Image (cartoon, rainbow, N blue to C red; front, side, top):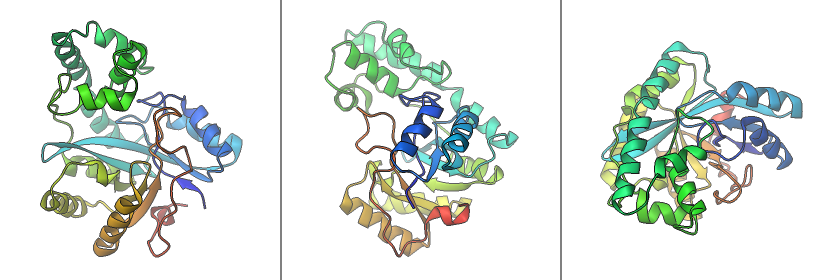
Length: 276
């Protein structure tokens, strides 16, 4: 089955509206899709309706920002109840700090000669409550400062660069707790992306499992084949369910289109066995 359990819409930092994401996924042969916007479930209802119209399976999801060992970690929640009050309160709490961070990022960029960056970023954010680094990056590309989003991140928006601003997101245990309270399955997203030592990565999964987390993205648009094999080994060793995901944001920004990432290794237990 062609399954894609992590992607984004204009409700967070994707380029396509929720229903457009679903229609693109269906055109690519996706049979089961999860929309997992950052810290927001506002697109789930529209995506679910579109999935019914085009005849593909749909999983309500979310991606929660977590602070751990000096890194921002992402935990995906799958098969959640998007109306659960515990989850909604938690997501509101996480979103609450985004505006202050965006203002601070704009001020830092102004110090290196990039003026009015927040106003520019907001032009790319369809959801005014969720201005992200990706929106700043798109503004800098459109302004001709850098040729593409990846180069913007490398030069301006990661730790040690002029536009990076430290921010405290949710605690790992809180994020997993909100997901499980909403009846969902918690998944560590794209684990190869995190700049964690081997010891910190093991500690991350120790705490994740202890909190009730159940799965890891073995296959991700951000993972090389070597990284896929590495996290397949971790899933086997820890008895975790395995997820497959593109982490699609847009055609020109994502290394993998919807439904087009590698298949899971056949001996792993897929996370969708829990809800498909």
